[in-house]
Length: 64
Image (tube, rainbow, N blue to C red; front, side):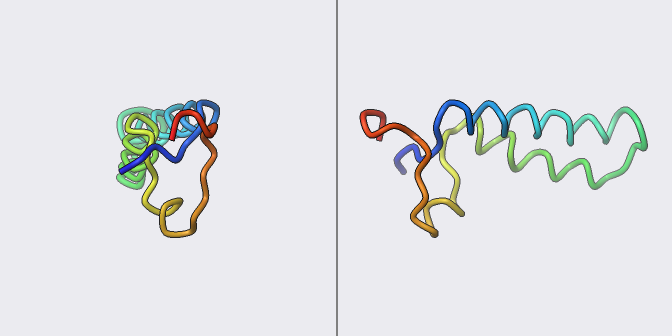
């Protein structure tokens, strides 16, 4: 499992995941906010299974 996400991609995923997860506790309090766990985890780990299936890599060559 090699990293396939770049720094900017990871940062966007972490922020988006936290915002979506916050919907569970603040705001409309909808359970759909639990979807935020997926981008949060992929951002923290640095590997996206969908990117792997599609052959997409946003990380620099040296960090693969």
